[in-house]
Image (tube, rainbow, N blue to C red; front, side):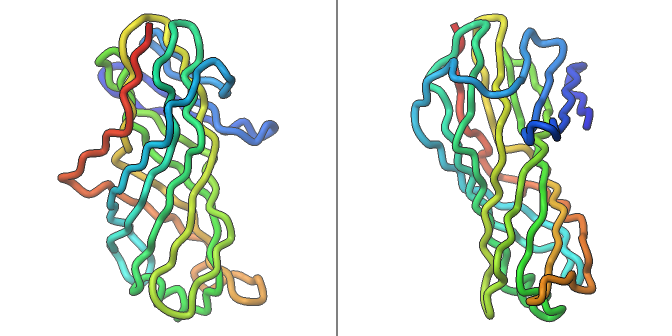
Length: 211
């Protein structure tokens, strides 16, 4: 899906045959491609954020998320910067989970895409990370519903020295399918779940120098 930010265009496409997501950034001396082993990890980064998501039946509801990823300590010009161990732990509030239980939802599964705020040497890129997976997750008998979203992050190659910064994007889109205990879909079928990052948060994840 094309996104434009300050005359920079970024496109995202799923490589179905390989089962991975691939992003390409044009016009900034950088390219995102399939991850390789060109950069060394520095450790896990964890960021707690909150979104407002538009659910069927209950409308706009608060949704908590914890973004986890491992970023390299530094990058080199012409070599890939790889973000690994990416996952997002999501907590859906009890009222929304009650609505799923009301229609007989015993589990939920689906796919997702999320925005990533990326700056390369001060230039903003709005990119979309596609191909994320929401595994089949049981709906508990009561209370909140927790699940984990995972997926590969393409490597980013920079062709000029400087700095790359990563931050949680302002938008998230899920495609959710609740299922009954026998595996059949509920009356909700498969629905889109648009979410927006709540204001007043620090979405920064990491800054990686490139030499």
